[in-house]
Length: 433
Image (cartoon, rainbow, N blue to C red; front, side):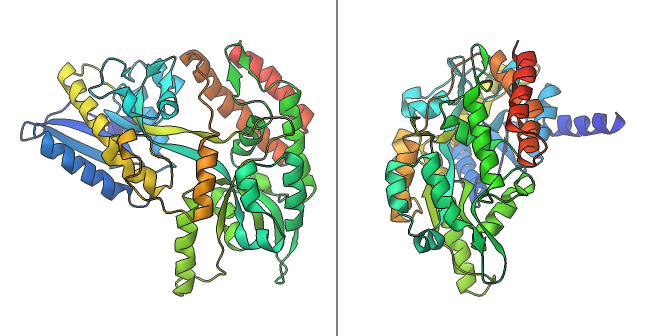
């Protein structure tokens, strides 16, 4: 208990946001993440241009780690002293805190400046809680050399999509051994979370995990999805130890030509893999060059192809006893960090622009065939489920307490698909009732 109090005290000390600097300027604090390799430099440029135009405001920022940052923010939020501006996307628990700020009547800029779907992902119950800087795409990828060796027409798949049966048939061609004796797999996906189940469920007629009535993961569609995944593991298309595969191991298998297809993939992998190839050529790292192919998630026969996507950006929070003037200054900072000038981040991540004034102004680092695929995949992102903050908070709990541990039990063979479904039903009813 004493340790937790000390941690909270430290964070409260770091988050005393409604403060004034020694030169009398209003200090607005920003907590963010390493969005991409050069993002901090971009952020510093954005802050410099903002402060030049707003001499009475000083912006202080901190770049959090992806691993520890969310917990640090939750502690600050629960203590009633979050940063003024925070990177991410709205969650039900933020609304429940009463400290996230509804921007509907606070903005100086027009909502029409932003992509409508991207903006919808920053809303809960039609209340706008943030502005986006990019629309993310979490889809699948492939090893171009292995695909070509197996005669896979990946450009056709990029354009037209593929079914579960078609994917399984092609992925089976990747199962075998390298000359060195190492196993090769048709498909590798990280197993330390529930993303694979989400991707395939969305493409089996379950675009959202819940609706106004409760969880949708309680019928034959989610059962069939889990059976399909179990079969991929049992047949050897996926590694038997998938439950222990993390993102680093997934990429290791891809770079080592041990994975024909893999997930989760993002368009940004294209320049990342290209940079890795340059390091191999320069003798900085050992290995064999590999090229990345951006691919859609396969869909079950008769169902609609869907991309897993959404938007992320900056949200506005207030603190206890914060002054209205400070809140208005924080709004100005948030707007600048999500303006057309901030479009560099989306371009660096090879993602579509969300601010309309940024469209066509930044070059995306994609191979031509992947650029076409990215456009198709972005068009397959569905609008978010517009349900209550209460339901969103219940889903946060359902995901953390039920979905992730149950799915890992399925991957490890400790649970059958039928047993996993029963857990979803029983515990889902308890949480969503």
